[in-house]
Amino acid sequence: MFEKKIIILVVAALATIGIFGAQAQEPNCQNPQSQLEMSFCAYQDYQAADRILNKQYQRAIAFAKRMDAVLPEYLWGAEDALRQAQRAWIPFRDTACVAEGFIARGGTMESQVVSSCLAFLTRQRTETLVSFADMAG
Picture: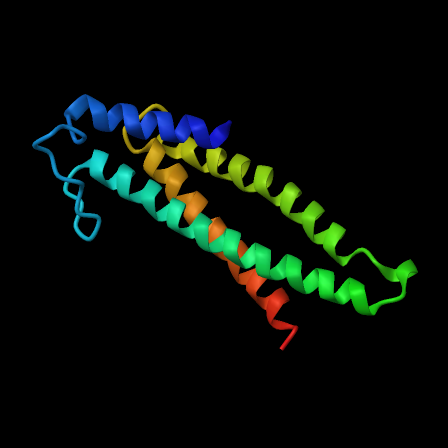
């Protein structure tokens, strides 16, 4: 639900100025010129970070399953623990970024602040998942 709100805000803002119009070009995220472009690019950056996180999460889950497979049954739980941790982390990330967005609450920069926070925390979590999965060697 949180992500839908961000998408709606960004798409509505883009549609308002005609970025999706027939003549309009997609913003240059290497050098955004307006607040709207900066917000759009920050959201695109978050989406890219989230795609990488999802790939690394699958890698980490595969590693957790392999760990469980070599342990006696009474010691199983790596996969379940990782799933629970991820399920707890997602609302933490979303809520932390909403809180950070209050520095620009109600302003045009709010969605950029939230998206940038989402991208940052998502990359942090990805690094944790990579470290976990890399323990497999």
